[in-house]
Image 1 (cartoon, rainbow, N blue to C red):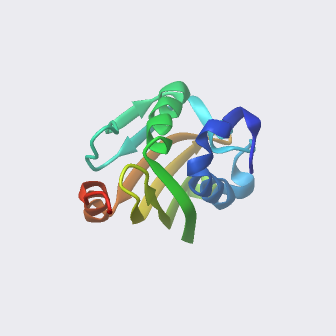
Image 2: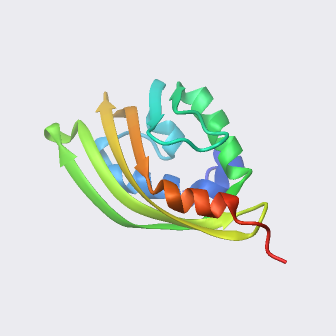
Image 3: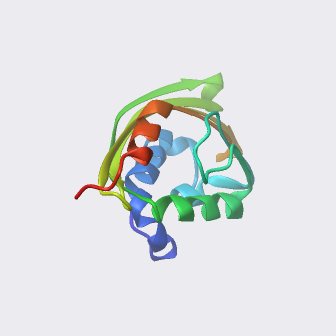
Length: 145
């Protein structure tokens, strides 16, 4: 859902919308950044240049995503599978994103599995797994002529 408050993050909107939809009525807030705690931990279990392995807090996560949207524009996010566990306090989502690396105009397609821990109807902890080879291939392909 477009929100002027988060307009700078529009290139990641398909991802944000997919996550918000996956969590449905388990969380409160309209946008991805509204459904995370102030002290959230966002952990990625892979190495991508320019993206920290662990991000702590909403403001640092917003700064990290600012770098993301300056480099990748997503056109869609799909293939969502949602697994709710622990009475809805833990949600595992599997999904794909499709976009473009802005510097090279190379297509970017990737698969993810994210484990989300909720606390007081907000995301308190996020652990992310992805197809690292897909990211590497997209990020290291030379600019198209």
